[in-house]
Image (cartoon, rainbow, N blue to C red; front, side, top):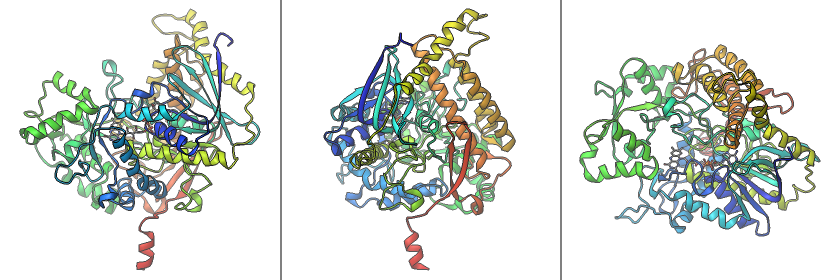
Length: 619
Ligand SMILES: Cc1cc2nc3c(=O)[nH]c(=O)nc-3n(C[C@H](O)[C@H](O)[C@H](O)COP(=O)(O)OP(=O)(O)OC[C@H]3O[C@@H](n4cnc5c(N)ncnc54)[C@H](O)[C@@H]3O)c2cc1C
């Protein structure tokens, strides 16, 4: 191992992942911790990293409290409705009450915001969304982080969290390797904020072969946000609540601006409004939830999926009417230029001009994340002033491991944060992390060289495995003594796809399939001890795969535990097809024992904090 140089960095606040939440965390940590040492470690380069790398066309979470447009309570009601009741309202409220101040800073920092010419307010795309010229969104927030942190390390993939050897269940930092130099990096830290994004590519994507890598969620989001905490025994929540998106086919182009601003609509191959057709059947499954407004995202997916299974596809977005208006046509194209150029390229390559041809839609493979219209992630403490006792253990956004904080996609239970809410949550986590240090909760952390050296050996093992095993390659990349990251990834994706509710089964699974899936995942875990990497890039792929694999185990355990179909359209439990509020109106929480690798599951009450007071007064 001595051939790989080791660098040590001691700091107060370590931010893992410099995406939206990570940049927010670095910025806010400096505000509260003037004299603290703040370090951010990023797998790519924070100027263009994470889900916002390409830019965005809308900020999807803005209350507009200064104009009385929405209040945090409204947002809680909205997220609760969309997630079929299953959200942490304390976290959602906390994010919503602070998100406007974040957006106002983006405005000050030079993010071009579209304005409503008549009112002078930010131009609304929908009730929660405001429109931006957001190609440079990420470089702008990155600049704030660069000015705030003592040091930003780019191109370092964090592989493991370090644990304090003096006090049980307290974090001590993180380790990783530089993907360009091959150097090993040890970050000993008093607090760690994990902000490493969501998980794509754990389910087999629709785009395979030459299209591989084209996914809706960022292909480089590899589940580190979940794997790092899971590996050290942090509790997770709602990991079954994966998301499936209705998007333009093949390019995954977003539909939000089309529905909300251009007022386009969908129809089946016969030009019918198919959603109405599935009303009665959906009501049978979920009861009155189908009558909620707006219709929860998963239930709209459900109608789409059922219509396709029934042979009514392809489903089209009717663009030919809106695109006759030159202004709307421009908005339609600009929407892609700002964030998904690839969709325009796909249409060009398929001779689709949306002015004359209605483009096809599809439902995506499932993704796991905590910031979009879904809420998988870590089980964190809420804010002191809002959270009931089960949801509060001292520091806002702290996981169940002391000193370990989370934000953005990392944090479960709080959907619909999007880019602005993730940045806001990074700020909240950083403020709490600084307080944790000030309260002297991080004193006396001990991380021995042995712990760091052991991880070093583990980190570079795939390179060693390959060096030895390449001599036994029988043809191409086939070797009896190692598997390559791509082979392992494709195996993982098939297991998840075929057993855990991916596209192969129209999102259907059941206890028997999940049991088999878990068995196959356990064997994959064994085989991943033999993953080989021929260079540093493949070493990154190897670690991305390991992180995806452990995330997948957690998703499968959660899916097995929740014996109902809470979100038809995201996935179905064929053995429990109906929503079951009597037994499952609760949050699911898991913990993986770091020593045995076994998961334990529990139900935790879901508290409806907003409206509860009013209800009590009324009764
Ligand atoms: C296609 C798409 C469209 C979207 N559209 C909108 C929209 O219109 N409006 C809106 O407001 N929001 C939108 N969002 C949501 C928004 O992008 C996310 O909510 C937000 O980026 C989540 O922030 P995050 O910090 O948790 O993750 P990210 O911003 O993805 O950041 C995670 C960071 O962690 C890094 N990382 C990962 N693993 C490691 C590791 N092991 N070591 C070190 N670093 C690591 C990554 O490189 C990345 O920089 C969209 C997302 C997607 C994917």
